[in-house]
Length: 113
Image 1 (tube, rainbow, N blue to C red):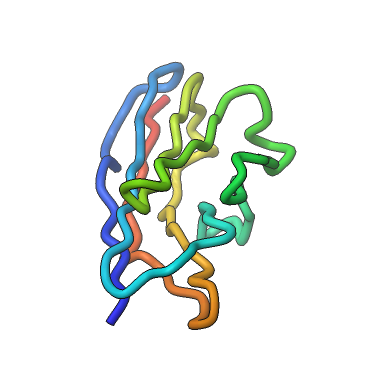
Image 2 (image 1 turned 90 degrees about the vertical axis):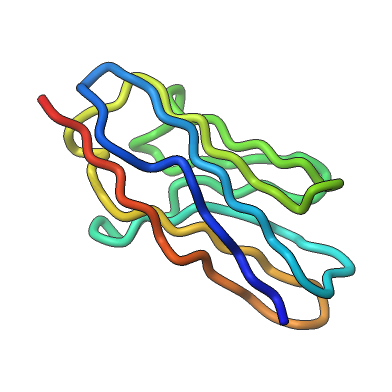
C-alpha cells in the first residue's frame, strides 16, 4: 500500500514564503515523476523527474522551486514571494513505476494581502 503524506501548508502574508513537503511510503521501487497540483486553479504547479529535471507552471516560474530527495521518496515545494492568488489547496502526486499514480491528502495554502 502506497501513501503520500503532505505537510507545510498554512497562512502567510503576501510576499512571504512556505515550504511544502510530501513523503511517499510503502512498497516503492521507483517514482517518476513527482509533482504538485493546485486544485482551485486546476494548475500543474511543478513537476520533477527522478533525474532532477523540473518544469513549472507559468504563474509560478521564478518564485517556486521544486526539489526531491530520492533516498526519502520525498518531494518539496519551496514557495517564495507568495501572492494572494496562490491561495489554494495543493496536492502532491507521484507516479509509482509499475503501480500507478498516487495523490497526497492536500494541504491548504492561504496568502493574505
